[in-house]
Image 1 (cartoon, each protein chain N blue to C red):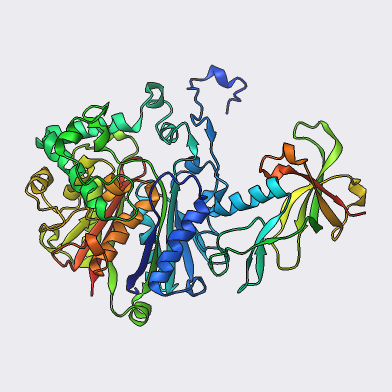
Image 2: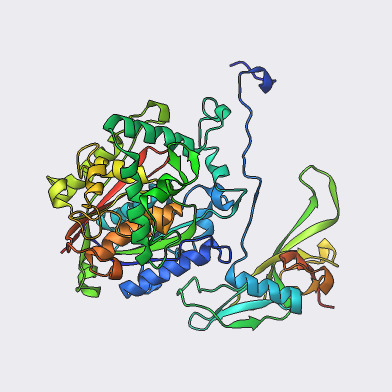
Length: 388
Length: 156
């Protein structure tokens, strides 16, 4: 199996991008990633596209619609889609394209345009549910998450004040991200606790915003990486993914077992025996503030119920022992589903390569983990990266 | 197996997609193209010098080399038919009178094609290579859409 490195990353501003087409967003991010890698499009062997349900953009086969903006024309090209989990799944697909020995350079482009569906992107989410048992009861994402949050708080005795701290940390971290949609340097725990109720216990500032945007990565075999960027060798050392059962009613809502399995797979591949000690930085998926905590636990970075305590103690701050979501995360930078690759995989790459600028963490990390979560809220993809 | 002739008689749940419409953005290059069409009656393309390709409608990037394209060229209103097909009945089987002729219009060797309709021509008279020109709606009726071009007709 060939070793694989990340050699470039790029992303657009996350916001409602009414002026640009999805293709134009793809091109903007892909061009940045290629420029950072110092490669031209002609030097790319294959392209992977990640983008969420066609129903957001209103174009069936939208992976194929976006392909020319993603640089896929006349190349081996495939779309990979696992809902929100796409953010880390497409880089895994890029990894296996190279690890298999088939290709030396792969461009990975993720795009989302949630502003097209009217009246709101929530209308698209409305029909991901089972048409016989769920939909007659008119579920929406927020109240399903409210139930999950409730179970999580109940089972592990987690306080809402500690969960609110995640929104505060991430929205403040996002101030230093040039692509951020909802950064807020002055936000307080009280602001989060008193924000507009959505479906209690979930309030507005507990949730990340829908968004438009694109992100891109350039992956290369380690041999190629040593030629083009010997100053920053950041490799993908472990990958994992796993999915829980179809019905959300049949899952453990407090602890994400599927994520623990995916993480275990990735850690074993990377030769990590004790993730609590060997992982120095993490970008878990944070579409809701409690999800960051739950995902830290699923990633085996602490015991179930312990993430809130670490957050309260400041361990997960940018200058803490284990920086978590130093990018500002989905809560602060925005949530254009698949395109959040830029603040998960992109951020860990930039941090390990010491290219994160104002967001650079203090503990000079060597090994990092990032994770995305999605499909019908029961899938996770995990990627472990190292600086060599 | 029993043939189900009345689907409403088996247990079921009716549903519908809840998105009521989509807002499709024309994009940065699309703004230039459709504004020039509406205001000036022009068809613009974007040229990539290094690949020698002109895109119509224009794009902000070349899909071959990813160069940023900011050179817009007026392609004129004349082209030639590269391929075509004729529809004589609609999807419900009703006759279309006159028949609808859809064609790919080429604006030159190194230029991408534009999909449009042919008019003021009998289906039997259409051939590949036929020289055609765009017939635009009067300016006050133009909306900045591809249908601001009514059709292409043979150059007499």
